[in-house]
Length: 135
Ligand SMILES: [Ca+2]
Ligand SMILES: [Ca+2]
Image (cartoon, rainbow, N blue to C red; front, top):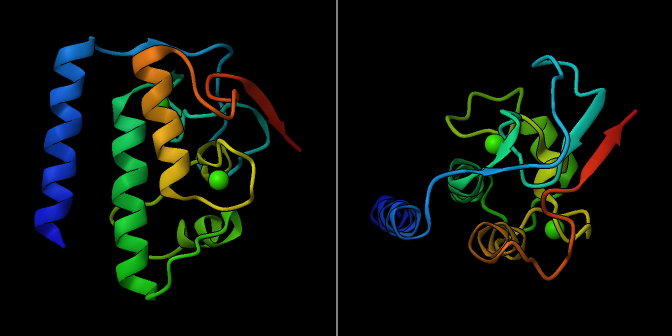
């Protein structure tokens, strides 16, 4: 499993080198760590104000770690929110921002949307880079 993760990270790093560095996201995110109230950007999972490779890598690492820890593959946004309180190495600071296709779950499909957005400035769901508000 670790080998696979390393391979994914390496290939994503290679992609970064091929397609440039970071892409500025529309809007800004300024929520405190434990309070997600406010504006966020789909794809900016680590809440640094950019949709970048580090977000896609983090989602990939999180999915792998969560599956290993919980032994099931369907990760809801709520699961990911709860996981922030666990001792995971790769939790998602803003899990809602990772559900690009809006189905309520964080899956490889969301991560693929993020990659396509970074490479082509287009994702199938059409939400990556869009601002959204958490009440
Ligand atoms: Ca980010
Ligand atoms: Ca999803």
